[in-house]
Amino acid sequence: MIKKNYNTIECFLSDTSFTNWVKKNRLSDASFWEYWIDNNPKSKEMANDAKEIILGIQFKKTELDKEKVSSEWEKLEKKIKEKHFPVFKKATPTYSRFIGIAASILLLISLGAYVANKSFSKITHKTTYGEFLNLTLKDGSKVTLNSNSSISYYKNDSRKVWLSGEAFFEVDKKETTQSKFWVLTDDLTIEVFGTSFNVDTKHQKTDVFLEEGNIWLALKNGQETKMKPGDFISFSSKRNLILEQRSLANSSHKTSWKNGTIIFENLALSDAIKRIEDTYGLKAIFKDEESRNKIITGVVPITN
Amino acid sequence: MKNLSDHFVWKALKEGDLKAFSLLYKTYYSMLYNYGLKISKSPSLTEDTLQDFFLYIYEHKENLSDLETIAPYLYSSYRRHLLKTMKKKSRTIAIDEMEKTIIDVNFTPEELITHQENETFKNKNILNLLNNLPKRQKEALYLKYYSGLKTNDIAIVMNVNYQSVVNTIHKALKNLREEVAVHQLFNS
Image 1 (tube, one colour):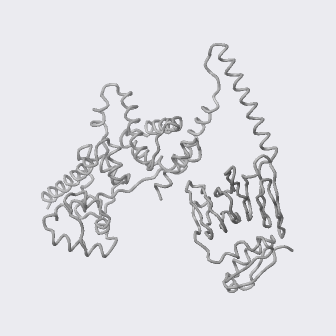
Image 2: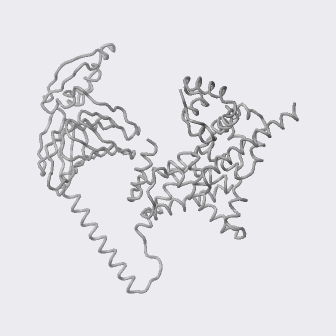
Image 3: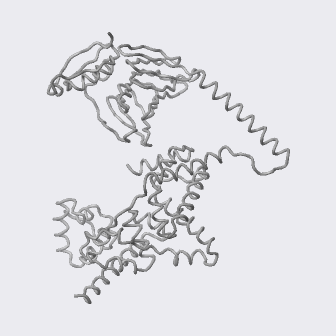
């Protein structure tokens, strides 16, 4: 192993392998650096200084009480909100004051009208247990809604839908307008441009499986990620954690439900039962605990 | 990954996302509070200046420049804001002077881990020796080993260059080592 010259202390400090050796992270780095220092007596002092800087002094870090931080935040949030909707306190010349008031009334009216218009024209589709629904949205996109699920969107914008439960989307590509399609869940936002994918929000997390095309995910924790066909991701905003992220070779079991059957492939019985419970709204009881872990393969119809 | 999310949080804040701002606040409040308290020595002044500082950030969000890492920006801006407020209160000392004389980070026994990994500093009087170091050296040590900032970031916060930070930390540890040696000599 030949390394570059170490003439200054910074060379050591910026060297990952050196840091590894100091912190005893890797054995191979250790044998190298011990050998190196024995053979470079001139640099020994410098290396020791660098070692000392990396080790430094250890402190116990005290974090403030979480509740204290939260209450401080609430105070600030209140201040921000007050400033964004200011109350006129100072005496100002009559006409400019009048204009100010008139403008804010106008703003309130138009804001109110806007909100009212938006919220009153919200459309919701819902399914109960043991039922599933094929929908075609106004823009031509197809949605298959699994049992006990719902989607909603504003009448004037069917390319932005809120989902709870599970659904499979086949989004129509808008070549001319290049307009995007959004699916929003409690955990993340999916941004797509013509593609097909499955979204499942049961059990306080959101699973996304991409069958075709490309999509962007914006997780609630601020992270963004791009998915390729075959990718599967499971994210929980409550736990702020990516539970699972991988590429699936065989994916039929993720989307088979939209054709009316649930496919189980080498799945633990307890996981299979969970899917059946979700679909039919029933509760299963295991008579003997051992059968929980039994691996099964099979098919179950989705409707009663 | 940390930097990636920093980038997105900052971007969202610039677009006025209050949730992103809340995340930023809750992530950095504690660390900035500890730092502010070291400088001001007053819990109430630290709290007040932190609130003003965060409000200022939110109100000027459109004018903030793009950032890849947030920590150095917050530390340096808050430090400046706190010093300015303290200067207004004292009215007598020029701000440059203040930096040199007022920032006097002192460590408490609770903060020091007694079982140091660094063999040289396994000495029960290390706290005293540490607190007797020159002020600049103490602040650099604090930012590096307590706040966990990178050398580049410390340079931004303390408004000096990279080389100077390395030198300051190096000198601090060297002073400390020599003090420990003297101490051991007289007590053995």
